[in-house]
Length: 145
Image (tube, rainbow, N blue to C red; front, side):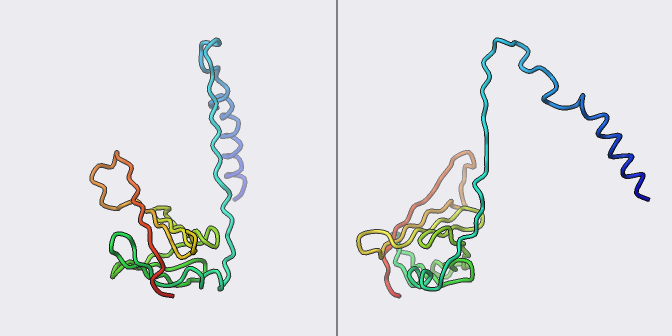
């Protein structure tokens, strides 16, 4: 039963050399300047967070816009809840920086001279014009541990 898939793979490989994008001469004008862009993803390394680091950011925060933020430790980061909204899971990128899995919410803790300040930035979900980029930044002071 294996010869058929192998024969099919071999026939596709034999027909592929003429179909490659690099086999054609592009741009046609050899004197035209060529721009080159290389895009590489940042390596996703898991940050090991310790209990004492989670304790340093856990607690209640009074946000500058009047909201109240409650932060609790989780296995790989924190669980943050604003007022009565649904809790959000954020993963640790460092002891002081936590990000939602979709990248729309970032929380940075232990800021300021007293290291009791935090900053949250987020992309609002109710953007009326999708062509317009928007990020909201809210700051807070630790209210209670």
